[in-house]
Amino acid sequence: MLRKWFKDEEGQGMVEYGLIIGLIAIVVIVALVALGPKIRDLFEQVNDRIDAIGTDGTTAPSGT
Image 1 (tube, rainbow, N blue to C red):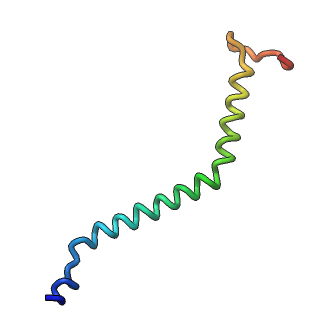
Image 2 (image 1 turned 90 degrees about the vertical axis):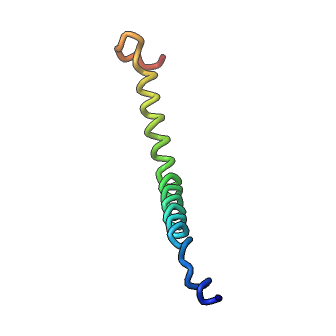
Image 3 (image 1 turned 30 degrees about the horizontal axis):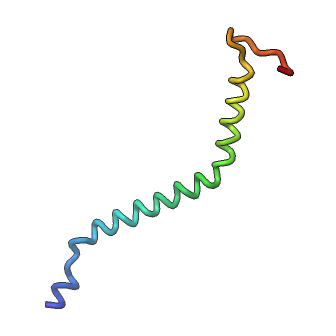
C-alpha cells in the first residue's frame, strides 16, 4: 500500500507547471526592477516632448 502511494505521480505535472510559473514571475520581477528607472525616464522624456508641443502642432517657445 505504501509503495503504491509513493509511486503515485498524479499531481506531479501541476507542481512542475507551478514551478515554471513561479520562475517566470521571478524573472519578470527582476527585469522590472532592473529596467524600471530606464522605462520611467523614457516616459518622462516623452511627456516633456508632448508638453513642449503647442495646441496647433508647433513647438512652444522655450521658457514658457
